[in-house]
Length: 299
Image (spheres, rainbow, N blue to C red):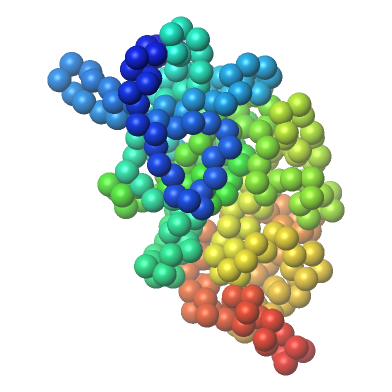
């Protein structure tokens, strides 16, 4: 495991990584860290964790060191894996990862500059990343590896490749670490009413046992939020199924509606990425404004 030690003088010269205004960051200070290997120059992101002692910090370091040890076995290019543990004057403070010129997925999904065809393409890539992770779990010894905190801010559009990457891997679930708190997996989440999601609270804020069902629930909430244009995870389960019935009535294919319905039933969740293009023709009718205007008329 590589540890990069940064002097106080160098640290004082680092430039902050500027995040979009609507992208929150409550865990760490982020800096651009220049690096040089012989004649080759590169840039990394230094993530200095606000909590640098205690159980939360120890869990983060365990997660990062495990990812570093297993990086070659995981071998998923779309995951922005940690590069090293970081120390300031020999005191551990966080970790580094590659700097990628990018645009946050939340910005992409809410921007009128991207067509719905482009947005669906990027959402499909998120699903493909989850499918690749499923294959890692199935075909390697790394059987307990999940992104855990799946939400729009934890994916980026790589401006060099034009494809989606997953970031903030320090919140992932792997080996014997504790599951971190996740945006869509809170005690107030509607999944608390569904038995297949297993409550498993821990000392660092995790609320559920992380598995394929929790992963795909979060992914589907991202998809539907893009089309519904509101935080659909906040509506009641009853209202959710009324909305799905509306989707069926306007012609959305039954297969993908069924996949969306599974999140609040005992049926195991399924990855809908192969079906997402079927939603494109209905984009203008799936938003909550049109839904509310038409639901009573269509009863």
